Length: 445
Image (cartoon, rainbow, N blue to C red; front, side):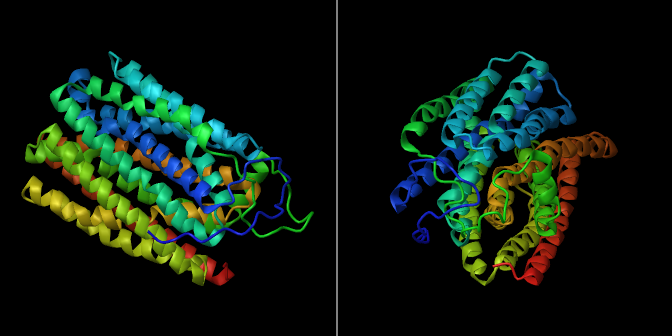
């Protein structure tokens, strides 16, 4: 892990603030970053555990694949995105982000446990909606906090460490969910998944402190930037930044493909290769966790190194990674055995994680201080509405369609659907390549 250099002393930002307890030392800010990464892992554990449980849920509730895709993706993603920007607007107005994160963490953890006691599709859908609503405010608040803890040139590495929570959470969700469901049932797995979040929600406010907003950015002359931006005014400002728009479009395309594939890989391995829940959960958990964490960290580290030449250089490694990952996923889906598929899966998971940290760093660095939570929310809305919500749903619908075309062969139908999704990785790479051209033309440092 590279050393993150000491931040400059807090400076006058574009808006006055009364925030106290600024973590000026390396230790306090690193401790906050690590806690945020841990909460992020719980965030993903609670949202992703349903993926490994979807086959027994499908059996219990007698669902079609498109209904299962709606339950695992849409129920969470649609309501997650619906609240993202309104909550981010509140965050940008100066609410205490530390207390807000603690409250949301407690609520989404409780709602995850509630999923375990539901008795039908409608009840499960409603409980997952609650998880999505509660998780909507975490990432905008966390991204905003990190931007106030680290200077622009340090943010890719900091974002990379923070984003490691994603693969770790996926690893925990898949592994724990698969094993518990195999030897107990899927309801017990969901009940257990909610416990850690309630505990960390009680601890976080006593450890973390609210930093000064804009304290790590270059000083802004009085009167050159508004202290507060209205909701629509802020969105219009972001929309006029072409590089920001294409970062969002590319990230949404990446997320659409990867969310659809990741959600349905457990079902693919079970249907095609006859693997058990425990085998799939542990195998995918280790691969997603370790390879995803390494790829995420490496993408952030290299983003910081390349970023010394300007923001345009940050996109190089993610583009290479995603273009290489797409054909590798196609090979995974056509391997003759489950073991061979899992071994080959290591490469696309690692390569496909390169874009995560740079995407966070770019959205924050391209947005004004007064717009950072909303910029994060726009990023999250696009990635989740198009990715988490639509990716699994479209994959499920395509699976049903291809299954009918293939004479009822559900395994082949699902394979064909997932292969089709890889095309969106190239679409995302095209958007990010254009971002690099725009930023190089601007000479953005």
